[in-house]
Image (cartoon, rainbow, N blue to C red; front, side, top):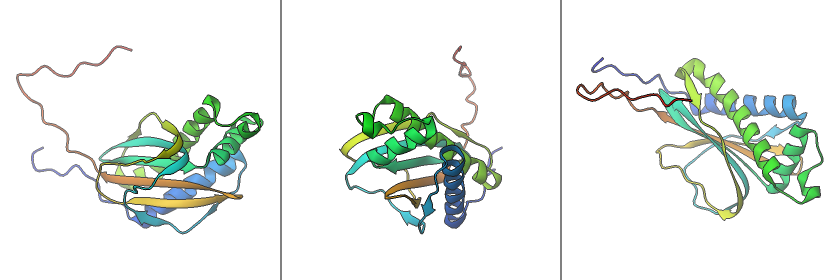
Length: 188
Protein backbone atom coordinates (compact mmCIF):
# COMPACT_ATOMS: atom_id res chain seq x y z
CA UNK A 1 0.00 0.00 0.00
CA UNK A 2 2.99 2.32 0.27
CA UNK A 3 2.97 5.06 -2.32
CA UNK A 4 -0.68 4.62 -3.28
CA UNK A 5 -2.83 7.72 -3.36
CA UNK A 6 -6.10 7.11 -1.56
CA UNK A 7 -7.60 10.48 -2.47
CA UNK A 8 -10.27 10.57 -5.17
CA UNK A 9 -10.07 13.30 -7.83
CA UNK A 10 -11.25 16.72 -6.67
CA UNK A 11 -14.71 18.02 -7.37
CA UNK A 12 -15.06 21.41 -9.04
CA UNK A 13 -16.58 24.28 -7.08
CA UNK A 14 -19.22 24.61 -9.79
CA UNK A 15 -20.31 20.97 -9.35
CA UNK A 16 -20.30 21.36 -5.56
CA UNK A 17 -22.40 24.54 -5.84
CA UNK A 18 -24.85 22.67 -8.08
CA UNK A 19 -25.08 19.88 -5.48
CA UNK A 20 -25.74 22.44 -2.73
CA UNK A 21 -28.44 24.12 -4.80
CA UNK A 22 -30.16 20.87 -5.80
CA UNK A 23 -30.04 19.42 -2.28
CA UNK A 24 -31.30 22.59 -0.60
CA UNK A 25 -34.12 23.20 -3.05
CA UNK A 26 -35.23 19.56 -2.81
CA UNK A 27 -35.27 19.47 1.00
CA UNK A 28 -37.01 22.83 1.34
CA UNK A 29 -39.63 21.96 -1.28
CA UNK A 30 -40.23 18.36 -0.19
CA UNK A 31 -39.98 18.60 3.59
CA UNK A 32 -41.08 22.20 4.20
CA UNK A 33 -43.21 23.05 1.14
CA UNK A 34 -41.03 26.14 0.79
CA UNK A 35 -39.74 27.59 -2.45
CA UNK A 36 -36.27 29.06 -2.17
CA UNK A 37 -34.51 31.12 -4.82
CA UNK A 38 -30.80 30.36 -5.14
CA UNK A 39 -28.47 33.26 -5.74
CA UNK A 40 -25.12 33.15 -7.52
CA UNK A 41 -22.66 30.84 -5.77
CA UNK A 42 -19.36 32.19 -4.47
CA UNK A 43 -16.06 30.96 -3.06
CA UNK A 44 -15.11 32.44 0.31
CA UNK A 45 -12.34 32.10 2.88
CA UNK A 46 -13.04 32.08 6.60
CA UNK A 47 -14.78 35.21 7.70
CA UNK A 48 -13.97 36.98 10.91
CA UNK A 49 -17.13 39.08 11.03
CA UNK A 50 -19.63 38.66 13.83
CA UNK A 51 -22.86 36.77 13.22
CA UNK A 52 -26.33 36.71 14.72
CA UNK A 53 -28.86 33.93 14.37
CA UNK A 54 -28.71 30.16 14.03
CA UNK A 55 -25.88 28.11 12.53
CA UNK A 56 -26.01 24.36 11.89
CA UNK A 57 -22.71 22.53 11.39
CA UNK A 58 -22.05 18.96 10.30
CA UNK A 59 -18.80 17.18 9.50
CA UNK A 60 -18.07 15.06 6.43
CA UNK A 61 -15.39 12.34 6.46
CA UNK A 62 -13.92 9.93 3.95
CA UNK A 63 -11.26 10.24 1.28
CA UNK A 64 -12.46 13.83 1.22
CA UNK A 65 -13.39 15.53 4.48
CA UNK A 66 -14.88 18.83 5.49
CA UNK A 67 -17.79 20.71 6.95
CA UNK A 68 -21.26 21.70 5.84
CA UNK A 69 -22.91 24.74 7.38
CA UNK A 70 -26.36 26.33 7.26
CA UNK A 71 -26.94 29.80 8.69
CA UNK A 72 -29.95 32.07 8.95
CA UNK A 73 -31.64 34.59 11.18
CA UNK A 74 -33.51 33.48 14.30
CA UNK A 75 -36.74 34.54 12.59
CA UNK A 76 -36.13 32.25 9.60
CA UNK A 77 -35.03 29.40 11.89
CA UNK A 78 -38.36 29.68 13.73
CA UNK A 79 -40.26 29.68 10.42
CA UNK A 80 -38.35 26.64 9.08
CA UNK A 81 -38.91 24.80 12.36
CA UNK A 82 -42.63 25.52 12.26
CA UNK A 83 -42.87 24.29 8.66
CA UNK A 84 -40.93 21.10 9.45
CA UNK A 85 -42.96 20.36 12.59
CA UNK A 86 -46.24 21.66 11.14
CA UNK A 87 -46.63 23.93 14.16
CA UNK A 88 -46.98 27.59 15.04
CA UNK A 89 -43.80 29.62 14.41
CA UNK A 90 -41.75 29.86 17.63
CA UNK A 91 -41.30 33.62 17.13
CA UNK A 92 -44.98 33.94 18.02
CA UNK A 93 -44.46 31.73 21.09
CA UNK A 94 -41.30 33.38 22.40
CA UNK A 95 -38.46 32.73 19.95
CA UNK A 96 -35.75 30.15 19.50
CA UNK A 97 -35.97 27.22 21.89
CA UNK A 98 -34.78 23.61 21.96
CA UNK A 99 -37.44 22.56 19.46
CA UNK A 100 -36.21 25.12 16.92
CA UNK A 101 -32.58 24.08 17.44
CA UNK A 102 -33.50 20.39 17.01
CA UNK A 103 -35.40 21.21 13.81
CA UNK A 104 -32.46 23.19 12.45
CA UNK A 105 -30.14 20.26 13.25
CA UNK A 106 -32.43 17.97 11.26
CA UNK A 107 -32.64 20.41 8.33
CA UNK A 108 -28.83 20.70 8.35
CA UNK A 109 -28.57 16.90 8.39
CA UNK A 110 -30.99 16.52 5.46
CA UNK A 111 -29.46 19.21 3.25
CA UNK A 112 -25.79 18.36 3.83
CA UNK A 113 -26.67 14.64 3.73
CA UNK A 114 -28.16 15.14 0.27
CA UNK A 115 -25.09 17.13 -0.83
CA UNK A 116 -22.94 14.23 0.42
CA UNK A 117 -25.01 11.72 -1.56
CA UNK A 118 -24.55 13.74 -4.75
CA UNK A 119 -20.78 14.29 -4.41
CA UNK A 120 -20.05 10.71 -3.29
CA UNK A 121 -20.45 9.63 -6.92
CA UNK A 122 -17.28 11.58 -7.69
CA UNK A 123 -15.43 11.60 -4.34
CA UNK A 124 -16.18 8.16 -2.94
CA UNK A 125 -18.02 7.15 0.23
CA UNK A 126 -18.33 9.70 3.02
CA UNK A 127 -19.80 9.70 6.49
CA UNK A 128 -21.63 12.45 8.36
CA UNK A 129 -21.12 13.56 11.93
CA UNK A 130 -23.94 14.43 14.31
CA UNK A 131 -25.09 18.01 13.62
CA UNK A 132 -24.26 20.82 16.02
CA UNK A 133 -26.45 23.93 16.19
CA UNK A 134 -25.37 27.29 17.59
CA UNK A 135 -27.70 30.18 18.42
CA UNK A 136 -26.79 33.61 19.65
CA UNK A 137 -25.53 37.08 18.89
CA UNK A 138 -22.09 38.38 18.10
CA UNK A 139 -20.38 35.05 17.51
CA UNK A 140 -17.85 33.94 14.92
CA UNK A 141 -17.45 30.55 13.28
CA UNK A 142 -14.11 29.46 11.88
CA UNK A 143 -12.70 26.31 10.33
CA UNK A 144 -8.99 25.63 10.71
CA UNK A 145 -8.67 23.72 7.43
CA UNK A 146 -7.23 25.35 4.32
CA UNK A 147 -9.32 26.00 1.24
CA UNK A 148 -12.39 27.87 0.21
CA UNK A 149 -16.01 27.44 1.19
CA UNK A 150 -18.44 26.99 -1.68
CA UNK A 151 -21.35 29.22 -0.67
CA UNK A 152 -24.91 29.42 -2.01
CA UNK A 153 -27.42 31.89 -0.58
CA UNK A 154 -31.14 31.23 -0.89
CA UNK A 155 -33.93 33.76 -0.68
CA UNK A 156 -36.78 32.44 1.49
CA UNK A 157 -39.34 35.22 1.32
CA UNK A 158 -37.80 38.25 3.04
CA UNK A 159 -35.05 36.18 4.72
CA UNK A 160 -31.85 34.51 3.52
CA UNK A 161 -30.57 31.01 4.17
CA UNK A 162 -26.88 30.46 3.51
CA UNK A 163 -25.48 27.00 2.81
CA UNK A 164 -21.71 26.50 2.63
CA UNK A 165 -19.52 23.45 2.20
CA UNK A 166 -15.75 23.07 2.41
CA UNK A 167 -14.09 19.82 1.28
CA UNK A 168 -10.38 19.00 1.45
CA UNK A 169 -8.47 15.77 0.81
CA UNK A 170 -8.76 13.41 3.78
CA UNK A 171 -5.76 12.13 5.64
CA UNK A 172 -4.02 8.98 4.50
CA UNK A 173 -4.92 5.93 6.60
CA UNK A 174 -2.41 5.29 9.35
CA UNK A 175 -0.25 2.21 8.85
CA UNK A 176 -0.53 -0.68 11.27
CA UNK A 177 1.99 -0.21 14.04
CA UNK A 178 3.30 -3.63 14.97
CA UNK A 179 3.79 -4.20 18.66
CA UNK A 180 0.80 -2.04 19.64
CA UNK A 181 -2.62 -3.50 20.36
CA UNK A 182 -5.33 -2.73 17.78
CA UNK A 183 -7.92 -0.12 18.75
CA UNK A 184 -10.88 -1.58 20.60
CA UNK A 185 -14.48 -0.92 19.70
CA UNK A 186 -16.51 0.81 22.37
CA UNK A 187 -19.46 -1.40 23.45
CA UNK A 188 -22.82 0.15 22.71
